[in-house]
Image 1 (cartoon, one colour):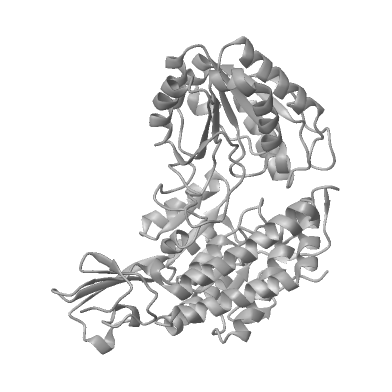
Image 2 (cartoon, rainbow, N blue to C red):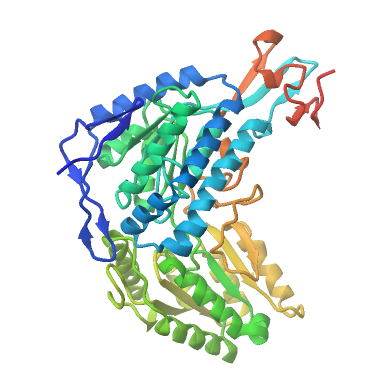
Length: 526
């Protein structure tokens, strides 16, 4: 059986590794025919050395060069849409329409174009000039970036074309893409288009490279390598923390997106006004994509009342009646089962679902669990175990103070949402809860479910640990996401002709915003 090649130093080449793996069709639970290599350390080292050589070549290139590549890649991805959505659907069981063709693939090319605009315009780099001291600084490329793609977004977060990839390139860095084992064929096709786009736009060989899998030990060596600038990782908490430990040990930046249960509060006035409407919104949000979104609402907080009981019944009935979707793979099913077991062992009672099966392929019944506020606070660590999939936990608190105690017990999350009454009845409780919740989440929502992530410059797709590894950064939204893969370059008394164009007295484009003597300006110095 043919083993697919890796992309190293500008060439698709046979891997030097002997171990291989096959992806699985989640709908049939059968392995797909293609085999992919597990790269040994010697091959990983080749990719690192090539990326380092490229980083030295492109250092100092204008943003236009990287923007041209990103725009060309976006065009190529759009042109190959049919092939991409077909193989991604086969490898993930995600529907071709609307999910892959109409939503995720357009989002991916849009991200690339937004990153191109940020790189071309240049203000993302925050050029800063103090004329009196002649000290000038700007964010510049950090060096080769490793991007670990997750299982749940085969396009938008892919190591060879997704958001982290786009941000790293916009900052001027070569990328080593680490594919995900659940959709290596999709990643291979994206890397093919990235390689072609690189050739067409004059990027050096090795600007984009692809390996599919390594051992855990070699993954840790990779993120800690002296020649690697930074890494981006989206995936499980356990694997992410192992990588972080390795990178932290040697001071290498690594930006993580890990687990998040994304609490939703439905306050008493909102329950009285429109509880059944919110129940429908919640059921749709939680079961969308079989619950396999990083912003899936995995926790609902209510205050005990007849309206709360009606809400719970409405949601339970909707979960029980809804079709059971297919999970991304055997690992996701196993992870979900383990999460359910942990919650039940720590006091959660099952309202519906909870057992494997009910659908096609890798699947689990739509599951809803329940605990009291006191139970949650007493076992908060365990009752916040992520259930990545079509499952959620309802917490019923007795009093306002108990809701506050639940909120104080929360870990960091990507999102937190509060539904409140339109007549102002919930304002006092909202103020108390939101004051605490604001510090627990990256994005605070009102009266809407958190599953939508708009790719706009103001978006924060990040949050306090364990949602991410650092609360000050976002994985979505340009130009902010670009700054993760940059370092601050400071120039003290450097002669004008030796400065980067953006730090010279004359604004190179007339469009870049620069902080000149404490004032933002698009003008020239002096």
